Image 1: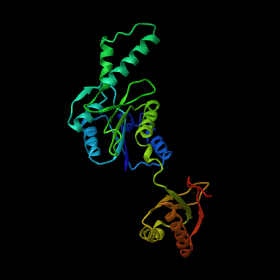
Image 2: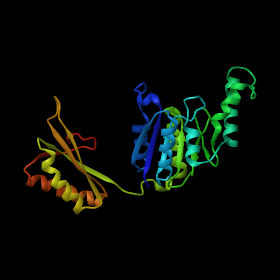
Image 3: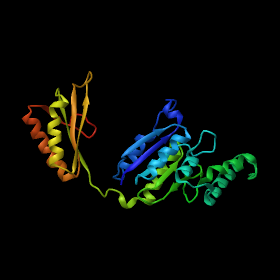
Image 4: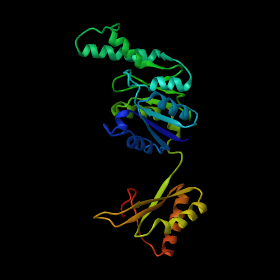
Amino acid sequence: MAIGLIIIGDEILSGKRADKHFSKVVKILGARGLQIAWAQYVGDDRERITDALRRSLVSGDMVFSCGGIGATPDDHTRQCAAMALGVPLALHPEARERIRERIADTARDAGVEPDFDAPDNLHRLKMGEFPEGASIIPNPFNKIPGFAIRAGAEDGHYFVPGFPVMAWPMIEWVLDTHYAHLFRTTPRAEKSVLVYETAESTITPLMEQLETAYPGIKVFSLPSVGDAQTRRHIELGVKGEPAQVEEAYAAMCAGLDVLNAEYVPATPAGQPR
């Protein structure tokens, strides 16, 4: 099962705000033995968001979407999801109750009685209008939910706010509620070395040989031009099925010895061990 991430918002693409979702989602997935397969950034443009969702909805991938599910004019994700599915928006009954609870909580904090029929509160209910047939994702921060399409399926799509304080626990809830049976079901390992003062073209044939000989692994090469503390080097490594990683790593080191390359084992963070 491949997992994708869509991050929506002009503020990310303009640089006004730095994206924090990608690195956090990688950690959330990694803690459960899962990993992200792809990510996409999209601005607040209905046509582009709808097009991205049309593609992802038929991809067979599980997808998380962060941002744009509010009810202001620059929030388009709910409407775009409905258009991508070819269904109308509808006020979700449970979302309505959670939003009304939030309205009541806010009124009590202000020392007044909630007026559910006030224009601003009626407008807040739009945040509970989801594509017909969607289910909700509970929001532990302020009760205003996100929504899910095909919840629990391998191609489930999950829509959460752009605010990290809300989005991240909601993503964790989705994973722990619907996908716990997939956690750590595919053991993975990774081992690498730092190869000094060697061109990538020199080690490329070795990389190709390793991937051919060990189909359960991937070979990676991360060049660095070096700095005041580190010489020019390439982090060369193998990752994948643990038993094949051990065999491929030994073969990789033997191949580097044949090339008379200078190398040292690396830590998981890509530093000299």
